[in-house]
Length: 150
Image (cartoon, rainbow, N blue to C red):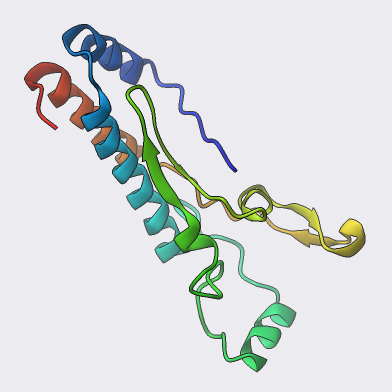
């Protein structure tokens, strides 16, 4: 599982205000988890943000084409693959999006894989929160802290 932690002072200040105002942050955390999930879905749709992912190797495209899976999306070969494995989650203090696929880390971070670790997989970071996404979350946290609305 990949865990992305965003350290942002503005968010911590808003969370401090929220914690002082309410005991149950579950509703806003559920909303934020949905926003994080939406960000990841957009990353898959656009094949990388803000920078587009490295294209597939020609050999990979040929292999997929033989199986009727190309043209297609870079990290989306099957209906039960990586993209649909990403799910939102939350509790009273945290919000997240995660994947239970064993290969999610190598796809996100890149590295050597395969038999003998001889194949290099370039990083294709899909668990990315854009600046606009972070601002959206901060805005929602601010409204929740001030107005108590979700």
